[in-house]
Image 1 (cartoon, rainbow, N blue to C red):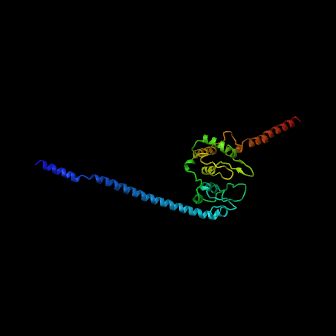
Image 2 (cartoon, rainbow, N blue to C red; image 1 turned 90 degrees about the vertical axis):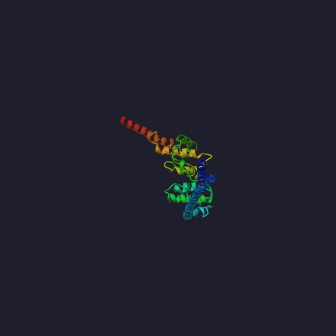
Length: 269
């Protein structure tokens, strides 16, 4: 009689026990549900991003046709008035248009910086449109534009690669045939990086094999340091080096000696 209740209890426990396949089935269902939900949201986000990119490129196409195609051609092929833009990349547009050099106001030895004619959104749209036609240097990532790199290494790199044209203090300098290396004080970090990537006008190209992105970031850090740190030697005289310093000595130093000589002679007479 004692075995019968025990057998019933065991039968009840077996009847209430979950099948091992049920656990597997629940895991599979959970994975499918999670994966499906993730795929749905990812697909939606990708579709939204693609749609936004298409709208930006379309806006850039309209801006290009209205402001740039006369010189560069509707298909970026270039004309007798301007070079081809196929393969120049978004970085070139970000620099040339973002600094106001383009659209060109007048022909000359080189395009000069002037007030920007477009908003940041319009510059980005133009850059996206040009980049969509052919691969080229992209706009740099924000991580390289913070100005928080190694200023000492940046100063050394700048002296080796840039100072012969831009001056060791970034004050700029004259080149041949009316051309010049512009001063770098106050230039936005993205435009400094852009210029190193694309080599605008007379500037050589410093691709990532010549100067790595981290080294470019260090150069930007050095230039930012120059912007924020006053000259330790006092009045900089334009930071033009021995030319301005020699002129100062010639005018004021020698002029002062002549003035004192005349005064002493007048007193003796």
